[in-house]
Every structure is written in C-alpha cells, then in structure tokens.
Amino acid sequence: MKHGKKYLENAKQVDRATLYDPADAVALVKKTATAKFDETVELHIRTGCDGRHAEEQIRGAVVLPNGTGKKVRILVFAKGDKVAEAEAAGADYVGGDELIPKIQNDGWLDFDVVVATPDMMGVVGRLGKVLGPKGLMPNPKAGTVTMDVTKAVADIKAGKVEYRLDKANIVHCPIGKVSFTEEQLGENLKALMDAIIKAKPSTLKGTYLRSVTLSSTMGPGVKINTLKFM
Image 1 (cartoon, rainbow, N blue to C red):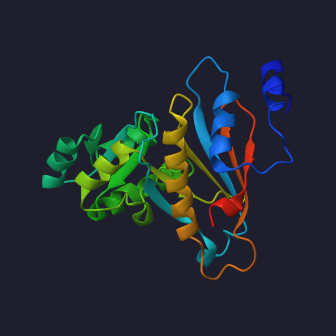
Image 2 (image 1 turned 90 degrees about the vertical axis):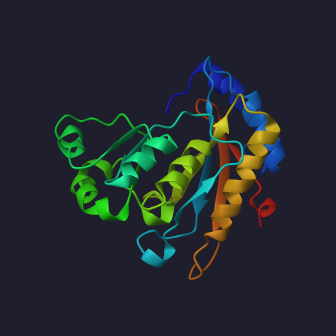
C-alpha cells in the first residue's frame, strides 16, 4: 500500500520498535494526525483467540466515559408501547414489518446501530443477509436485543461501542476523535481495554493480547505496551 508524503513524514515520528505507554501513545497519535478533518482515533487489538471456536469468540459492548464524538443514528424495531418508548428515548427511526422492503429492496441504510425488542427478532431475522455483513444485526451480548429500549438508546447515544473479533481475530474499535483531550482519549482507551481484558475466554491457552495498536484515521499506527493493561 502506497502512502502519501504527509503520512510518511508523520510515520518518522513513530519508533516502530518501541512499545509505548498508553499516555505516550495517545499523545503521539494526536501529534501525527494532520488531516484537514477531525480524525477518528481507533484501537486495533490482535488477539490470540481463534474465532472459529464459539468458546473463543469475543463480543460485547462498553460505554466510553467521554463518548465517541460521533452522532449515532439509531433504528429501533419495536411494536406496541415500545414504539413510543423508543421515540421518547431519542431513537432516530422506529418501526416494524413496514421497514423490511425499504431496507431489502430500496437499500435504505441511513442508520449506524439497530436495536430490537426480543419479540421483533423474527422480523429482523429476515434482514440477516443485509444487516449481517455490515455488522448491524442486533445481538443480546451487545445489549441491542432488549425490552429496555430506553436504556439501550441512552447508552448508545452516550457513547456505547460494540467490540467483536473480525475474521483475522482482531478487534477494531473507535475510542474518540483527535479533537478530544489526551485525558479524554486516555479514559476511553482504559474503559475499552478493561472490557476487552474482562472478556478473555476462560478456555484460551497462550497469549491473549498479541498486540495493541492505536492510530488515527489517516495517521500511522503506534504500538502500546500490553503489559500496562494487565
């Protein structure tokens, strides 16, 4: 992959052989983020898990203390009095069966998170082929299949992020924006890492955290000393 001149200049400030303390990594990521927009700061955690085995899957969610800095659009599948509850909680879109053709046929995907009450999962299941590949299927472990739609919507709006293994057994998660202070990013980083460490599968043998890298959208990766989290 070819990188631009600005990226290469910024990359020179990062010692690839060094494992940085979390606070130093945050400072360096902010320093090397020079794009003209407010870049997202992302954490990439390479694990020793094998996601092909159900007992080694990692999936969950955590509310970042300082939010993500991103406006999140929430779609709630609900019926009965849960519709009004979702609307009152601040959901951007609320509906049921009538949304199926809109999503399936019209390709409507103007939302970032999908929440569903358990009694609507039969309906939502019909959208598996559309929502699944995009990581949008509601899931009880992530708190997005629930009767308490008020709490679900409030948590997501407050900065709740979902973490899960990808096919390479890596977790990718945003922890805020470059415009955040170092303290805010540090607190969000700690909250996410605490949740990931707590989610360690009991059956896992060998190293759990193989590498932890912090980067901005357009900036170079900065490796963090994993021992600082254990």
